[in-house]
Amino acid sequence: MINSLRIKIYTRSMNNELYNRAKFLLNLPYPFVRLTKTTADGYLYQLIRDEEADIVINIDEDAFVFDQKRLEILVD
Image (cartoon, rainbow, N blue to C red; front, side):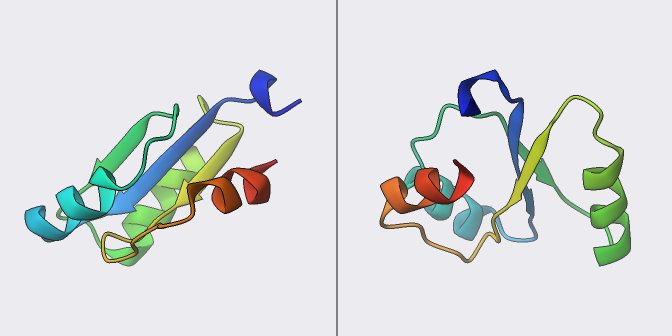
């Protein structure tokens, strides 16, 4: 079922180094969308308005995912 869903990963980012380090640890087959220079409200509205995604995953730029399999199980 999950293979038929359109999934995107969103990050509200202010720091290039943090974003690149966190993204380096993620080897997921979903598009990554990085939003910069936006308020928290603006970020949330952008996620809600995305009509090209069935599921949106928010991953902070300072969140480091070390167990990718658990994330995939959570999405499933």
